[in-house]
Image 1: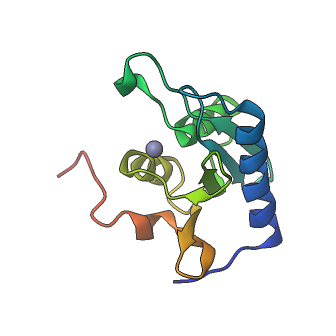
Image 2: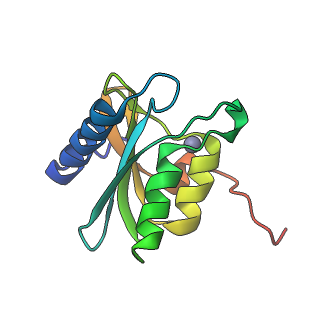
Length: 132
Ligand SMILES: [Zn+2]
């Protein structure tokens, strides 16, 4: 499915690129994320690494936490980029996290014909549920 990127989504990709360009730190911050809520607010963050590698926290989780702290987790669109500014798809845990907080969110991912926005639920068939 190729939904294409709106001007707002292109601006969101640029925001993610700006935060990782500004905050890149070898071994500590390699990924940038930006999200936009339906109220029009944007939050951007970088991922966290630590001396104990498995402590690492994805940039998406940090950005969602910032949105939660602001009381605004109705995510319309979210994107992550690497240090080179290339869009990267969210890991499995982030797919769960995004869909928990914003099941109607669109996620910008690399597609066959460039960056595209896809519904988070399309990235997560057979989503985890506590009630099974
Ligand atoms: Zn992740």
